[in-house]
Image 1 (cartoon, rainbow, N blue to C red):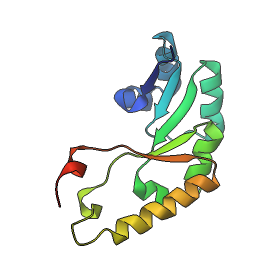
Image 2: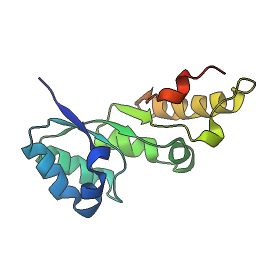
Image 3: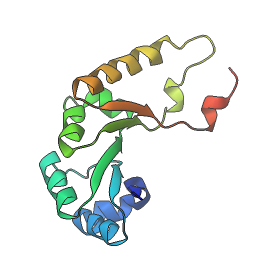
Image 4: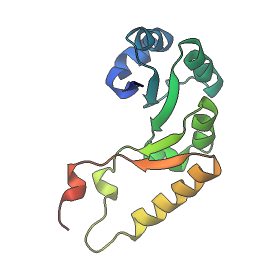
Length: 134
């Protein structure tokens, strides 16, 4: 069995001691990780630490804002070795309304293209508000 950990659940420990946290995650028996930020580390540093601690970088939760504003964000996660990149949440101010999906659709199409160009598969992490009737 393969067991992975969403690193968002240990984000405070990761920010305080990135390598020590990855080591502890490995020692707990996890084989894979999903990133939720990289704490100002380079892709090469993270890839080396994942190799050192036998952790497979599966995916990364990255905000739409970061996807749109950080030019090399997709290449960074591809270099780390992630296969997937995930839109983790839609802030209320950009959620679609019953009358307007076009802005969000355009944004998501743009980031999906960038993800594909970097060899990543785009995913979306849904929440309860997506099931509200508009």
